[in-house]
Amino acid sequence: MKNLFNILAVMLLCQFTIAQSLIGGYNSTASGHSLSLDYNIKKNKSELGVGIGINLPVRYQGDGINEYFGKKLYPVKSHEFIAIKTYFHQLIYEMGNFRSYAFYDLQLRRSGARTQTYYGIGYDSTLVKNRPEDGIIYVEGIDEYGPYFWIENTVGLGMDINISNNFFIRQKFGLGVTMIYGHDKGNISVNHFGRTHIYGFLAYFGVGYKLK
Image (cartoon, rainbow, N blue to C red; front, side):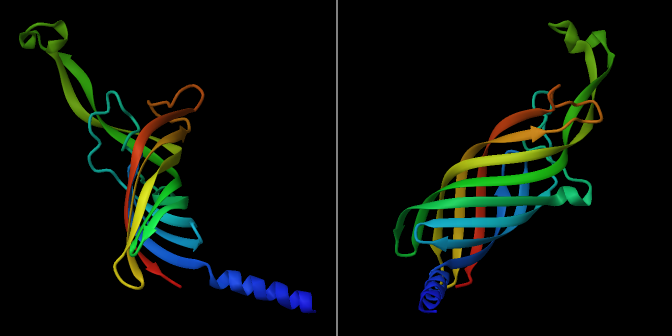
């Protein structure tokens, strides 16, 4: 009985030494943009978090001739708006209200994409100046493709700044690789293996509330 009491006491002590927070934030990643709500636990110099987010459609797709996936995520169906994330922080430096750390961030999405593109619809020889292709007449259009499974892996540095006893500001910046899996039903294919990848960065800004 005494041993059981000691075990319970240690478990309760560990529970009270774990800090917990809720954080609402904005994510900009290689695939696009999202809003997220995270829950994390922090003990000693480490922090572990999980979150759920809402994927935001990218309104400007840019020229898609050479790039079909970077910042091109475009959810249409309800489940395509859902993002899931987890992350791990390791403390680097802490002083007063300032805290810096290294992090690993993992974000998962299942969504289609779309991009701005141009289609040749005719030829006008009067437009030719130096090259024959100068005479091609193009019309602007939008290509929609997917859906794909996006796995975004990022490492980087972040910081937290306390603005009151309970609230703090969080910023994170990192570099990573996004793995993309799937076969498109239209005119765009990832490749014959059904997978590809892109490189990009993560920029995150959030406001957190300390639960205890």
